[in-house]
Amino acid sequence: MEDDNARFLRRVFGAAIAAADPALCVPPSLPRPGAGRNIVIGAGKAAAAMAAAVETAWAGQDFEGVVVTRYGHAVPTQKIRVLEAAHPVPDAASEAAAREISAAVLGLRQEDQVVALISGGASALLALPASGLTLEDKVFINKALLASGAPISTMNRIRKALSGIKGGKLAAACAPARLVTLAISDVPGDDPAVIGSGPTWAEGADYRLIATPRMALDAAAREAGMAVEILGDALEGEAAALGRDQAALALLTKEPKLLLSGGETTVTIGGQKPGRGGRNTEFLLSLALALNGAPNIWALAGDSDGIDGTEDAAGAVITPDTLARAQALGLDAAAYLAAHDSYSFFSALGDLVITGPTLTNVNDIRAILVT
Image 1 (cartoon, rainbow, N blue to C red):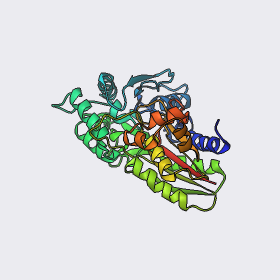
Image 2 (tube, one colour; image 1 turned 90 degrees about the horizontal axis):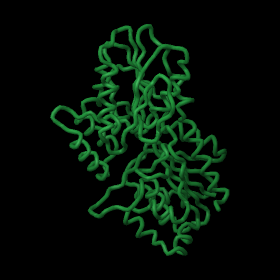
Image 3 (cartoon, rainbow, N blue to C red; image 1 turned 90 degrees about the vertical axis):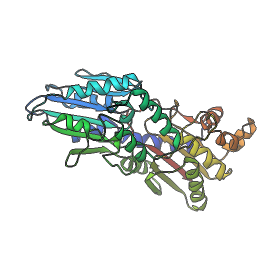
Image 4 (cartoon, rainbow, N blue to C red; image 1 turned 30 degrees about the horizontal axis):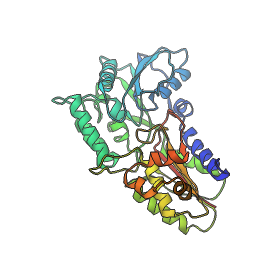
């Protein structure tokens, strides 16, 4: 049974996610329908929920559209067609969706308007190979990038070079219609050219950031109602190394405080076949080992989209007795970390955080409570 501190961390995590709910974030930034045709396009883990928010805000208006989201992230819509495809590795449905979305904006006129809904995950979900490449080429490169430990900015630069739709190419296809992009950022620094590999980003574009990692962390801080230190919303690097670094900070913290951070770490897979895990559970397992049972520190880390890597958990929770409980079950925490098998470790302890798809994505939320 979880204690009050673990439940507190779950509540703080929930507040961070709620702050990026498309139902709240989309309407204030949504333009009015234009005089001509109004086309809604989009891609990402939040795309379907964003589309539903557009339909609510534009009730009674004349518009049409198509968006693509990850399998299992669709929601009911009336006018905007919702497609599903694979993430983080694209599949044939990803290519088909990219072609359908591209076709939806062909032949538009100056009086027409396109609203693009972009969120994290769009890179894999819009997989249109550049000339001379095949989908199989993109799948091979995508898998290699995911295992490389490269930061998301580097991966997306490569993805854009291999794509017929990313890097502003979809924006060009919308011309001469007016294009307005509403984006939920899941990337360190909130660079529009990096979010989803920037399919609708171009210099001078009407590009509106409607939710960001910092906004989510600020909401978490308000929910906490105690002393908070935000360590940054764009932290990168190896998940295990960040776990050790933040353990050192927590151990130096003498008064009750909540340490919050966001960003996107990486996990570099060597030659061995990895176990089950994601960057958040890897961060936590490293953190727990470095804390070594410190009696006054709890932590939660999770991906705001509800999926840590490719698993069904958003992340996990650690408590002062995490290592002791693991030892009682015969679990070698260090061995699980070395095998990149952190999901299995926390699953055995019953400490996974499982939210299901949250239908938004502002990257990872990490919270360390020092009492």
